[in-house]
Length: 397
Image (cartoon, rainbow, N blue to C red; front, top):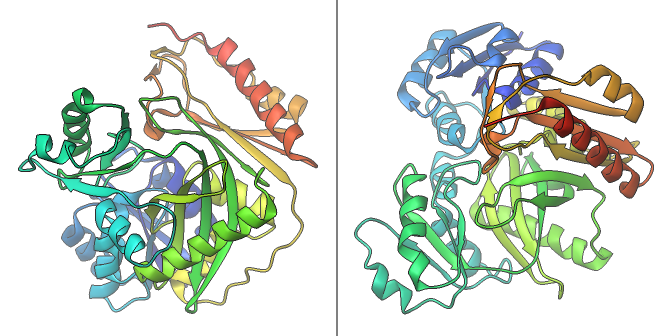
């Protein structure tokens, strides 16, 4: 039985752990949270901070693992690549992993390779003369951490008066205390999910996305198929393939966010060398394309054969359970909602739980997943169930 180590054992990683175990692999997990939900499903686990590369490596060596991966979080990417390198396992090249952690370096590489339509991009740290940098900028701009996860620290800046505070917030959310500044693009956000296996890039799907309003930019839901014209979606696929090759991503999952304007210009805004979060792996890609994404991601990690042939598929839409500040007073009958509306609900809500106002993905409390023959019906069903849940839980500040 091959041993696979999953870096991270939170809510979204728990789906990967369960999947790997159901496929007959021995599952091990590490996470800094001793109560991480994924620990319930792993064969073995250890309480270790996933950004502590040496500690995670020591655990992996002790357990003599056969493979390592991370999913749905950027924080485990470097550690997984480090372990793979040190133990001579299949995995993302460590130098590539370090490159991808820096959004400015990624943007620079994409620009040099003429991958998409974005041009203006700068980097800032505590020593940067922000006043001098302002003079080079054409506002509005997007300011975000050079590394990090969950949309924390990202904000739109419309003029000079907001710039310094935005940079401060972005640096505070960055592990390396650096911010990236690039042109603010007016467009719709889309996601792309890909898998690199046996040296070949396969774009599994392009996803329509819903986002929060400024000043925060966090995901509220996804849908397949998109509303894009065929030729624009085909160019988006080409941009994704070109980006992956330009960055030297040699193996594994790749999650890419992009903005697409009304005129069809494509702007890649974020790249993660791991499976996307928000039910992309467990539901959106498999339902929307017929490809068992997580199974193939796991097989790819352990060196087993993959099958990325699309099969039976349907329209799928998701909505995050995202609320304001408050305390959960009561819960709806989730099973009844699922049966009445033909949806799936995944949540980690409890009566008495403190809920934070939704600013980043980490403030979310779960997901509604709807399938239908057409995308509009799937979207309507997901939104209808979300509204009923919002009316029921009665959060109060």
